[in-house]
Image (cartoon, rainbow, N blue to C red; front, side, top):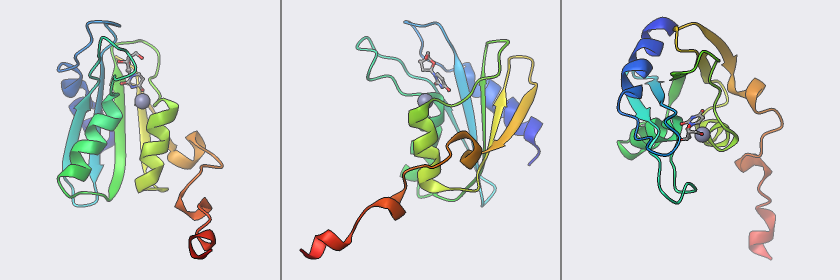
Length: 136
Ligand SMILES: O=c1ccn([C@H]2C[C@H](O)[C@@H](CO)O2)c(=O)[nH]1
Ligand SMILES: [Zn+2]
């Protein structure tokens, strides 16, 4: 699937955003290696901290349906600036793939493409968990 198609799907998902607090709508579209697309929007909460970003909504939907191999994720908001995933979402994205392409769009549908490792260099991953102490 082409980048612009995934951006268009993310834009449609943005319409579902639940944003009574910030009024900042975000949409995401996640392409799996099987060619399936999962969408997500941001879902806010009165306690703010319980807010879920669009990217994590899409990823959690996919994982909960049994899909864990991802190729691309497109992110869009209704801002004229390019929208980049927040730090928590970068960490969640890299949990599942170090090769995934992250497509950061603006409201006009223009986009820039990055590897997740560019957006989150020196990431902490499962390789960094010291397992030897489990036997101590
Ligand atoms: O990449 C981003 C950045 C922000 N948000 C959401 C969280 C919150 O609802 C609103 C403002 O931060 O935008 C996302 O969903 N994804
Ligand atoms: Zn986020």
